Image 1 (cartoon, rainbow, N blue to C red):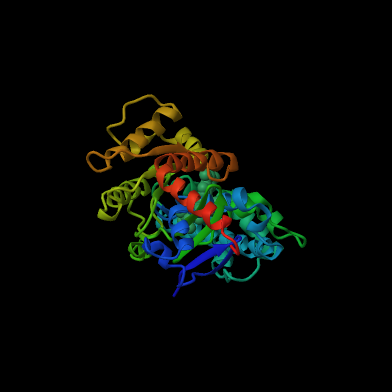
Image 2: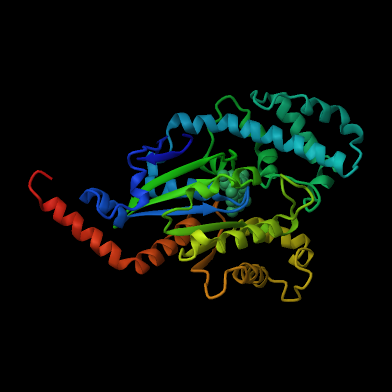
Length: 369
Ligand SMILES: Nc1nc2c(ncn2[C@@H]2O[C@H](COP(=O)(O)OP(=O)(O)O)[C@@H](O)[C@H]2O)c(=O)[nH]1
Ligand SMILES: [Mg+2]
């Protein structure tokens, strides 16, 4: 079946009997009708690496707290970080080849890393080699050309923390877990209660190969939450190194916002990675992606310009419901942004929620209920 939903924070296979709730059974048992009124499904969409799964990690931290992640799951992130680090270093070495940057004295060390098995734990000597390569001139040069070669956003974080990742008693911190990347394939549903509503947030894999599966999840959605990597304005895609990430995000957003399934669906925008965006602006302003931009060089002015580009992609006579500028690695940002989403949806569905609450209290007051 391949679909999953989470109860109490644990991820389990979706129960086909409850899948009916999504189809909207007006005539079903009263419990189903309560669910229909008080269960809200939000679809998280956006290009690969925009930060969707990081938003979900934060939502789980915020609304599920200790239930969100078990000690075994925390420990398992150590090997994810090892794999992320080897993969990021290999990508950067390949970037040097692609950009024809000679590796010089780093050739032997680079070959050593290219031969490492990505699934094997990193040893101290591997970590030291990665540290040396990272500080070397050719690799720094490739890293500075992210607009021409694909480099994962968290690469610098991995390289700078690699010596800590390989210590014997290494236990990933909350920040490590947020920076670790597991590419989402298929769909993950995170469910939590934030009264009066039971929220279900559906995280879908965002890379091109994954998007073909999206259509299956387009029914009975209360809102679209579209996540954008602001820093993508001077980066290229993992799937296609000739395509700018921001251009891809704008095209995808237009497709989604104009999709007939979402004619009535509120659209929320999370403009994410504002921390990386701010760093990137020190090197290059957004005119490299939007040559028509002649506004102020402040971060805010440039973020607002990008916001406007997305707003213009909305269909005629429909507005974005609301936009938040966030860094998903910052819990506070995600909390405020999601509170905005919740408030908006609750406000616009008051009648339906009142109906659900009334039915719920009737059910609770019945004997044997
Ligand atoms: N610095 C920084 N990194 C972020 C932010 N949001 C996500 N990331 C990192 O970007 C990478 C991709 O994020 P992920 O949530 O997997 O993207 P997805 O493909 O849309 O699910 C991960 O390594 C995250 O740690 C952010 O706001 N700031
Ligand atoms: Mg993901």
